[in-house]
Every structure is written in C-alpha cells, then in structure tokens.
Length: 183
Image: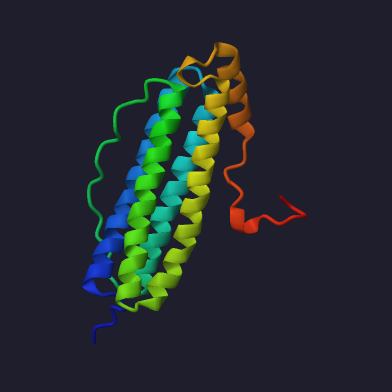
C-alpha cells in the first residue's frame, strides 16, 4: 500500500528546497568565515548563527517529507559563491540570497495550492513568515551599513556595527505584529 501523501511534483519541490536550505547554511558558513578572517568577529558570530538556522530549516523540511510518507533525496550542494569583497557586499549578497530563497518558497506554496495539498500549503506558511523575517533582517543590515557609509564605511563605523551584530537578536519584527501600542 502506498502511504505517500505527497504528489511527485511536491515531493520533488520539497526535496529541492531542502537542498537549497542546506546550501544556504553553507553560504552563511562561508560568509561567516570570511568575516572572521577579516577581523569581524561579531558579524561572523551573527552569520554562523544563521548557518545553524538554515540547517534547522533543512531538517524541518526533511522531517515533513518523511512524516507525509515521501522519500527524502539527499543530493550534493553547490559550492558557496565567491567571498564578499566588503561588509557592504556581504550584506547585499545575504539579501539577494534571501530574496531568491523566498521566490523558491513561493513556488512551493503556489504548487501546493494548485494541487489542493492543504497540508503542504499549511506547512509552508511557516516558511513564508520566516522568509519575511529574513528579508526584513537583511534589509535592516543593509540600512545599518548604509548609515555607516556603505562601501565607504570607516573603520570606526564598521567596528561599531561588528560589535552590535555580535548581540543582535536573530529575529526581525514583522509589520503584521505592529500595533499603535507597540509600533
């Protein structure tokens, strides 16, 4: 008896997303290593924490596939892109990576909606919210480096930013959570 509750297309899309999350973890590890090698321990710590978070996303998808009776397919992940050239470039790359990941998540949401796979659609809503947080966080990082001077940021500003990111929470506030009492 076949107990797989995932269509072949959704199973394939989820496996692909699982691989994307594993790749994202490697990207954050690479960027964190670059930051550390360049003396930015706080930025490195921040990026390493996000590498761990991306791996957790991968495991969340893996578990979902298994719990729905599907087959998990582990594939090779591509090497991370080239190292950033600056702190500004690092945050630009982080933002673009998150936007690309959001696009991939949305495709799965659309596919699950089109196939009326409401369990997968519901499961993916957590990732939709997570990607909104990730994009907001990346935008916040870009805003901070822009204020610090962007590509022309001075050492003092980068030092301050590095210190701030060492203790910055990994979450970003979402517009849907804002009220007049709690802007």
